[in-house]
Image 1: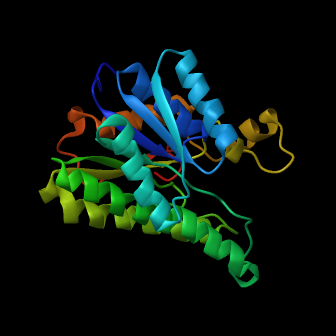
Image 2: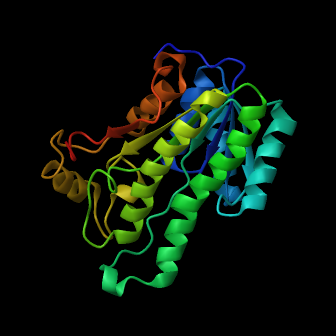
Length: 253
Protein backbone atom coordinates (compact mmCIF):
# COMPACT_ATOMS: atom_id res chain seq x y z
CA UNK A 1 0.00 0.00 0.00
CA UNK A 2 1.47 3.35 -1.07
CA UNK A 3 -1.08 5.68 0.54
CA UNK A 4 0.50 8.22 2.87
CA UNK A 5 -0.94 9.56 6.14
CA UNK A 6 1.42 12.48 6.64
CA UNK A 7 0.13 15.12 9.09
CA UNK A 8 -2.63 12.76 10.26
CA UNK A 9 -3.20 11.94 13.92
CA UNK A 10 -4.45 8.39 14.41
CA UNK A 11 -5.97 7.11 17.67
CA UNK A 12 -6.03 3.35 18.28
CA UNK A 13 -7.94 2.01 21.28
CA UNK A 14 -7.01 -1.38 22.65
CA UNK A 15 -3.63 -0.19 21.53
CA UNK A 16 -1.52 -2.91 23.16
CA UNK A 17 -3.12 -5.71 21.18
CA UNK A 18 -1.24 -7.44 18.38
CA UNK A 19 -3.50 -6.24 15.56
CA UNK A 20 -3.71 -2.77 17.08
CA UNK A 21 0.07 -2.48 17.40
CA UNK A 22 0.62 -3.83 13.91
CA UNK A 23 -1.90 -1.35 12.53
CA UNK A 24 -0.28 1.49 14.46
CA UNK A 25 3.09 0.55 13.04
CA UNK A 26 1.66 0.51 9.51
CA UNK A 27 0.14 3.98 9.98
CA UNK A 28 3.40 5.29 11.45
CA UNK A 29 5.42 3.87 8.55
CA UNK A 30 3.23 5.95 6.26
CA UNK A 31 3.77 9.23 8.09
CA UNK A 32 1.00 9.33 10.71
CA UNK A 33 1.36 10.29 14.34
CA UNK A 34 -0.12 7.35 16.25
CA UNK A 35 -1.64 7.45 19.74
CA UNK A 36 -2.22 4.09 21.44
CA UNK A 37 -4.84 3.97 24.21
CA UNK A 38 -5.59 1.22 26.70
CA UNK A 39 -5.74 0.17 30.35
CA UNK A 40 -2.33 -1.49 30.80
CA UNK A 41 0.54 0.98 31.02
CA UNK A 42 3.25 -1.67 30.76
CA UNK A 43 1.81 -3.17 27.59
CA UNK A 44 1.18 0.25 26.05
CA UNK A 45 4.78 1.29 26.69
CA UNK A 46 6.00 -1.94 25.12
CA UNK A 47 3.80 -1.54 22.04
CA UNK A 48 4.80 2.10 21.62
CA UNK A 49 8.45 1.21 22.06
CA UNK A 50 8.30 -1.27 19.19
CA UNK A 51 6.85 1.38 16.88
CA UNK A 52 9.46 3.94 17.98
CA UNK A 53 12.22 1.39 17.37
CA UNK A 54 11.09 1.25 13.76
CA UNK A 55 11.23 5.02 13.43
CA UNK A 56 7.56 5.85 13.90
CA UNK A 57 5.95 8.76 15.73
CA UNK A 58 3.89 7.31 18.56
CA UNK A 59 2.37 8.31 21.88
CA UNK A 60 0.18 6.49 24.39
CA UNK A 61 -2.58 7.43 26.86
CA UNK A 62 -4.19 5.37 29.62
CA UNK A 63 -7.96 5.13 29.23
CA UNK A 64 -10.83 2.70 29.82
CA UNK A 65 -13.18 2.86 26.83
CA UNK A 66 -16.11 1.70 28.96
CA UNK A 67 -15.91 4.93 31.00
CA UNK A 68 -17.36 7.95 29.20
CA UNK A 69 -15.40 10.47 31.26
CA UNK A 70 -12.12 8.73 30.51
CA UNK A 71 -12.90 8.56 26.80
CA UNK A 72 -13.79 12.25 26.69
CA UNK A 73 -10.51 13.06 28.43
CA UNK A 74 -8.64 10.72 26.06
CA UNK A 75 -9.86 12.65 23.03
CA UNK A 76 -9.09 15.96 24.70
CA UNK A 77 -5.58 14.77 25.59
CA UNK A 78 -4.88 13.56 22.05
CA UNK A 79 -5.93 16.96 20.71
CA UNK A 80 -3.89 18.83 23.35
CA UNK A 81 -0.74 16.88 22.59
CA UNK A 82 -1.00 16.59 18.82
CA UNK A 83 -3.33 19.31 17.61
CA UNK A 84 -6.19 17.21 16.30
CA UNK A 85 -7.68 13.79 15.60
CA UNK A 86 -8.20 12.66 12.02
CA UNK A 87 -8.52 8.86 12.14
CA UNK A 88 -9.65 6.46 14.85
CA UNK A 89 -9.36 2.68 14.93
CA UNK A 90 -11.53 1.42 17.78
CA UNK A 91 -10.08 -2.02 18.45
CA UNK A 92 -10.52 -2.54 22.21
CA UNK A 93 -12.24 -5.84 22.88
CA UNK A 94 -12.33 -8.96 25.06
CA UNK A 95 -13.64 -12.50 24.64
CA UNK A 96 -14.74 -13.29 28.18
CA UNK A 97 -15.16 -16.82 29.51
CA UNK A 98 -17.39 -18.77 27.15
CA UNK A 99 -20.39 -20.86 28.21
CA UNK A 100 -23.79 -21.93 26.88
CA UNK A 101 -26.39 -19.18 27.33
CA UNK A 102 -28.10 -20.89 30.28
CA UNK A 103 -24.77 -21.16 32.09
CA UNK A 104 -23.28 -17.81 31.08
CA UNK A 105 -22.15 -15.77 34.07
CA UNK A 106 -23.98 -12.45 34.18
CA UNK A 107 -20.80 -10.65 35.16
CA UNK A 108 -19.04 -11.99 32.05
CA UNK A 109 -21.98 -10.88 29.90
CA UNK A 110 -21.81 -7.38 31.34
CA UNK A 111 -18.03 -7.12 31.06
CA UNK A 112 -17.98 -8.22 27.40
CA UNK A 113 -20.84 -5.89 26.41
CA UNK A 114 -19.29 -2.99 28.35
CA UNK A 115 -15.96 -3.20 26.55
CA UNK A 116 -16.93 -4.52 23.12
CA UNK A 117 -20.14 -2.58 22.53
CA UNK A 118 -20.44 0.29 24.99
CA UNK A 119 -16.73 0.97 24.52
CA UNK A 120 -17.22 1.34 20.76
CA UNK A 121 -20.28 3.54 21.30
CA UNK A 122 -18.48 5.84 23.74
CA UNK A 123 -15.36 6.00 21.59
CA UNK A 124 -17.39 6.99 18.54
CA UNK A 125 -19.53 9.43 20.51
CA UNK A 126 -16.51 11.45 21.65
CA UNK A 127 -14.46 11.00 18.47
CA UNK A 128 -17.37 12.17 16.34
CA UNK A 129 -17.97 15.19 18.55
CA UNK A 130 -14.42 16.37 17.87
CA UNK A 131 -14.39 15.43 14.19
CA UNK A 132 -17.75 17.06 13.49
CA UNK A 133 -16.47 20.34 14.90
CA UNK A 134 -13.19 20.12 13.00
CA UNK A 135 -13.95 19.28 9.41
CA UNK A 136 -14.61 15.54 9.58
CA UNK A 137 -12.55 12.37 9.84
CA UNK A 138 -12.52 8.61 9.50
CA UNK A 139 -13.45 5.88 11.99
CA UNK A 140 -12.87 2.14 11.64
CA UNK A 141 -14.41 -0.15 14.27
CA UNK A 142 -13.16 -3.62 15.10
CA UNK A 143 -15.98 -6.11 14.76
CA UNK A 144 -15.54 -9.84 14.10
CA UNK A 145 -16.58 -12.63 11.78
CA UNK A 146 -18.21 -14.06 14.92
CA UNK A 147 -21.41 -12.08 15.31
CA UNK A 148 -23.35 -10.82 12.33
CA UNK A 149 -21.45 -13.17 9.99
CA UNK A 150 -21.13 -16.40 11.96
CA UNK A 151 -21.67 -17.96 15.36
CA UNK A 152 -19.79 -20.37 17.61
CA UNK A 153 -21.16 -22.45 20.49
CA UNK A 154 -20.48 -20.97 23.90
CA UNK A 155 -19.70 -17.48 22.60
CA UNK A 156 -23.05 -15.74 23.05
CA UNK A 157 -21.73 -12.63 24.78
CA UNK A 158 -18.93 -12.06 22.30
CA UNK A 159 -21.11 -12.81 19.27
CA UNK A 160 -23.92 -10.55 20.48
CA UNK A 161 -21.50 -7.71 21.20
CA UNK A 162 -19.82 -7.92 17.80
CA UNK A 163 -23.08 -8.28 15.88
CA UNK A 164 -24.20 -5.12 17.63
CA UNK A 165 -20.94 -3.37 16.70
CA UNK A 166 -21.57 -4.19 13.04
CA UNK A 167 -25.07 -2.67 13.16
CA UNK A 168 -23.97 0.28 15.31
CA UNK A 169 -21.24 1.03 12.77
CA UNK A 170 -23.72 1.07 9.90
CA UNK A 171 -26.15 3.26 11.82
CA UNK A 172 -23.44 5.72 12.86
CA UNK A 173 -22.18 5.84 9.28
CA UNK A 174 -25.61 6.91 8.05
CA UNK A 175 -25.96 9.40 10.89
CA UNK A 176 -22.66 11.17 10.31
CA UNK A 177 -21.53 10.92 6.70
CA UNK A 178 -23.23 14.30 6.24
CA UNK A 179 -20.84 15.65 8.88
CA UNK A 180 -17.88 14.57 6.78
CA UNK A 181 -17.16 11.54 8.98
CA UNK A 182 -16.74 8.22 7.19
CA UNK A 183 -17.35 5.18 9.40
CA UNK A 184 -16.77 1.50 8.58
CA UNK A 185 -15.90 -1.75 10.35
CA UNK A 186 -13.46 -4.58 9.83
CA UNK A 187 -14.43 -8.13 10.85
CA UNK A 188 -11.40 -10.40 11.11
CA UNK A 189 -11.50 -14.13 11.59
CA UNK A 190 -8.77 -15.93 13.49
CA UNK A 191 -5.47 -14.08 13.22
CA UNK A 192 -2.00 -14.99 14.43
CA UNK A 193 -2.49 -13.54 17.90
CA UNK A 194 -2.75 -15.10 21.39
CA UNK A 195 -6.57 -14.99 21.08
CA UNK A 196 -6.45 -17.55 18.25
CA UNK A 197 -5.24 -20.32 20.57
CA UNK A 198 -7.52 -22.50 22.64
CA UNK A 199 -6.31 -23.38 26.15
CA UNK A 200 -3.32 -25.69 25.97
CA UNK A 201 -2.97 -25.57 22.19
CA UNK A 202 0.41 -25.52 20.50
CA UNK A 203 0.90 -23.58 17.28
CA UNK A 204 0.81 -26.88 15.38
CA UNK A 205 -2.47 -27.82 17.09
CA UNK A 206 -4.03 -24.48 16.22
CA UNK A 207 -2.85 -24.55 12.63
CA UNK A 208 -4.23 -28.08 12.15
CA UNK A 209 -7.60 -27.07 13.61
CA UNK A 210 -7.84 -23.93 11.49
CA UNK A 211 -6.90 -25.80 8.34
CA UNK A 212 -10.10 -27.85 8.67
CA UNK A 213 -12.44 -24.87 9.18
CA UNK A 214 -11.03 -22.00 7.11
CA UNK A 215 -11.11 -22.40 3.33
CA UNK A 216 -7.85 -20.47 2.98
CA UNK A 217 -6.29 -23.08 5.27
CA UNK A 218 -4.67 -20.74 7.77
CA UNK A 219 -5.11 -17.85 10.17
CA UNK A 220 -4.51 -14.35 8.88
CA UNK A 221 -1.35 -12.42 9.55
CA UNK A 222 -1.99 -9.30 11.68
CA UNK A 223 -0.49 -7.25 8.86
CA UNK A 224 -3.28 -8.44 6.54
CA UNK A 225 -5.90 -7.06 8.91
CA UNK A 226 -3.88 -3.88 9.36
CA UNK A 227 -3.74 -3.37 5.59
CA UNK A 228 -7.53 -3.58 5.48
CA UNK A 229 -7.88 -0.96 8.21
CA UNK A 230 -5.47 1.35 6.40
CA UNK A 231 -7.40 0.98 3.16
CA UNK A 232 -10.70 1.79 4.88
CA UNK A 233 -9.03 4.84 6.48
CA UNK A 234 -7.50 6.03 3.21
CA UNK A 235 -8.83 8.27 0.47
CA UNK A 236 -8.82 5.18 -1.77
CA UNK A 237 -11.96 4.14 0.16
CA UNK A 238 -13.56 7.59 0.05
CA UNK A 239 -16.91 6.23 -1.21
CA UNK A 240 -17.02 3.29 1.22
CA UNK A 241 -19.51 4.17 3.97
CA UNK A 242 -21.13 1.87 6.53
CA UNK A 243 -19.38 -1.25 5.25
CA UNK A 244 -18.37 -4.20 7.43
CA UNK A 245 -15.41 -5.78 5.64
CA UNK A 246 -14.86 -9.44 6.53
CA UNK A 247 -11.24 -10.67 6.54
CA UNK A 248 -11.47 -14.35 7.42
CA UNK A 249 -10.10 -16.47 4.58
CA UNK A 250 -13.58 -17.51 3.52
CA UNK A 251 -14.67 -18.97 6.88
CA UNK A 252 -18.06 -17.24 6.71
CA UNK A 253 -18.37 -17.00 2.92
